[in-house]
Image 1 (cartoon, rainbow, N blue to C red):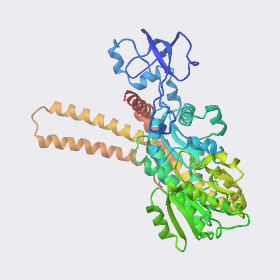
Image 2: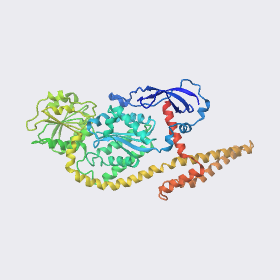
Image 3: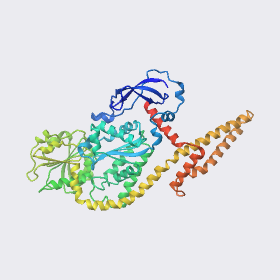
Image 4: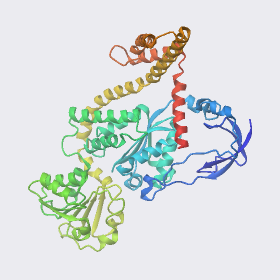
Length: 542
């Protein structure tokens, strides 16, 4: 084994001892002894870092000082190289589904807003996550109440570690602080969590419907994105089915259940001695959240309001839907002048920087005497109103975390309805787990077909070679067709016994799979593992 010198790129020097010697492997070189020298990684910027946040897209590289590599190294498969290295942990671990995240129940808005990723940047986030050494598939669910990363990880603990480091890098929140608010769930628990999210059972406002639309958007955005693959895609699609069933078969979605509805209710609770009929209302933003705010305001008796938006088209469309309410459109450039004439201001935009600073609000005139202080109801994440505005005697700010006051009012009724959904959740959870387990048979089917095809091709060539050239093309084709038909018929029985249907249980199917693996020495675990490693090697080269 030749001694080589290598430079290891790393974020932290502590794990690398000075003048250390390690056994390393790569897809292009056989295992060798190398001397290790620490070199810090330079973090590249990416789409996710357009908010002036650094992006973690790093990997360790071994740089050889010369190109005189043994040609035999090229014949070694990634799996062989892997098993000859200390990194053979892959062969002892099965990939798992994991969710790593923070939500309204575990982290304050001050932390969540730093981790928020705009929908347009979800594909880039998936790409960055799947470029990591232990992540196969990924999806991001980022809303005003949660930021959750779902992954299929080659290694359970190392995968979580990589995602946590990535979350820290894109947000600027130290890992130690992140871990105080972070939750991690694996496999069945992770699946159940997403099902509860889609059903509205994990929302601040129990049963709210907007989260289901957001889960659907994850699937829509993920289509065609490398890394949003079979398991993660199947997980989210099944979660949508669960969300629909819970809402159609229970009463959990009855009544006003949304963040927007709770925001309108909260403002009404704080309007002491007044109501929406007399208060001057300003809504900033006419997107999905803004539209819901306007509709709930109309339902609560608000007869006129000013709506600020970048364009008038959306406001005009809302005006057509909400009859008997005077909706006045104003451009965002008139924000401060409109705010000066408003008693209650709702902010629900996608702006990544505050719209209202303390110095802006300080300059605004006082509100009507019966109102007391100007109310800012900020349901945006990141927040649209600077928190220091609450320090003023003339204004008070409420954000999404303050909606808990409204939620507590009808908590018992909602919990009763949530119990109805648990039976549906359990049923669908078992269905998904059965589907996921059935995927284990796919490598066996492919390997078995390849095995039979290899034998068929070899025997066909032997037969034709014995016959020699004295055979017509017609007869040659007849022999070829015979060989193909024989293989298909021989495979029919094994294939039927690996098929998921009502005729056999999942346990029977998996036992049939293991029996075929033993009988034909298919080594599907190694085959699948090798494919995964090859994919990682290709990503590294790119």
